[in-house]
Length: 87
Image (cartoon, rainbow, N blue to C red; front, side, top):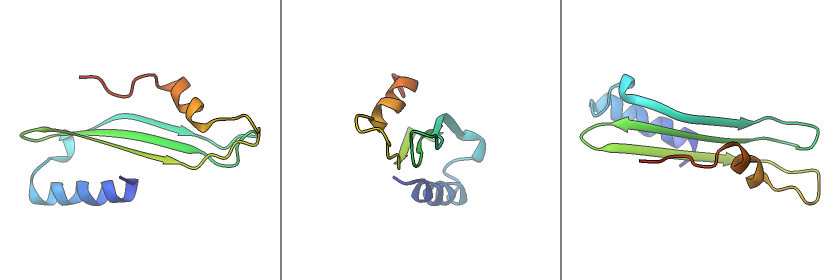
């Protein structure tokens, strides 16, 4: 789910009264900024909404191009977050 799709769904849930805005919790946000080794960045976000059930939404936008031939975008994210969610 992209960020824009998630935001659209979140607004629908709030309008229908299924969740309150204060029930929406941001679990993590990670944004790899552009550096001299990368042409772009990567963003990973996770949110939880509490209704009669727990909903966890995770979206990722990965737009990193490593200038180094052996670079790996996933390594950057894995180095920063070993475990995204645990229940």
